[in-house]
Length: 64
Image 1 (cartoon, one colour):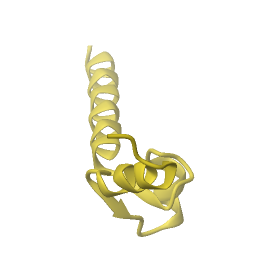
Image 2 (cartoon, rainbow, N blue to C red):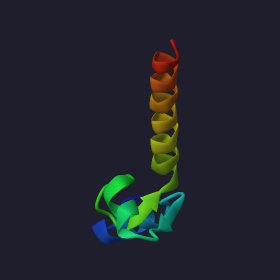
Image 3 (cartoon, rainbow, N blue to C red):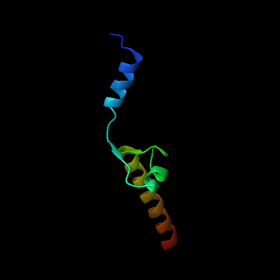
Image 4 (cartoon, rainbow, N blue to C red):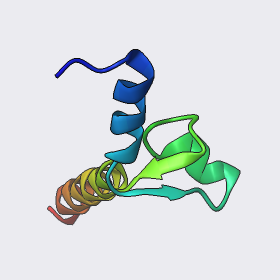
């Protein structure tokens, strides 16, 4: 039942879901995990949703 440390790390690496390579340095700087050459798609979607909510709130404030 017990595994070696390398096997455990390999299992974690194999299970990493929804990761894609970045296309530019801007993605490395702005999308989670920040500074990593791979972008986690769940984190990327979260950034877009948060940015959309902030823009929507700002537009509603300006519209009033």
